[in-house]
Image (cartoon, rainbow, N blue to C red; front, side, top):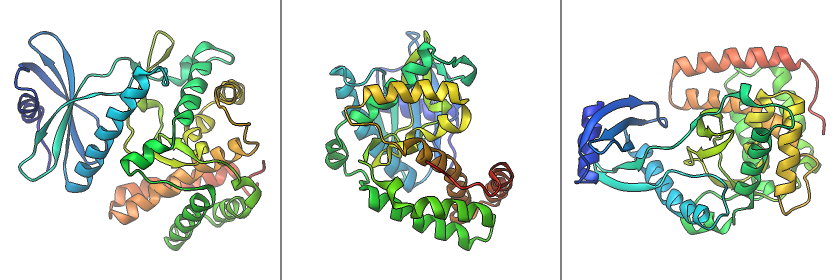
Length: 308
């Protein structure tokens, strides 16, 4: 079920009766949702997100509860950036809710903005460190998934077996990932509250610093390396060195010597998870895309194992 921006604007007025929309346009949002940017008659900007099915609705409600909790951490100066704050909800005829927020501030992170030793690179390291310093009890309070290091490694192994059964993963990649997952020394770490879905489009920047972090629906107590993977995969070593250095200074725990290796693995393994998403949901275009990405990755890494 897909909704037009006008339909979403009507839902926004149901959520906040005093809101009078004068403009509405579709914007990209989480998978399984319809989203619109709305401007009201006072010039204020809003974001409304409505689920297309029950699973997306449950994820959206869970994320809204987490965002309300994270807003308390922002107010207490424990997070150096903003998050979306739910301002209202509208019940949907088929069940679930549309959530409305004040529109986020900032522009999507551009990797070209990042210089070695630069302010923004350091700010990204601080952002990640502060997220991982949040109390894991927040996840317990909200019923979010929680793993210790061995449970997380086992989960990855199960996913690797599932990916192997598709016959779409090149043998060299399977060996590379299996060797890394069976190297028990790499998996001795403390799990933390993670964002779980960080990517450039989730990080909005203003004035050379992170302004807003979006997309918290995959938050869990898990491997901190998963939140670094998107940067390790995309940026040159001199930039990631600055990010990791600032991250380590922000954390209260001793640096994890295998953090970057697991981040590399997580970045590669994300392609296998994309494949599994396509297979599980019978989305042939996603499977085709993932298979091509796996072939390219296989060509890039060759038979070289992952080393810490």
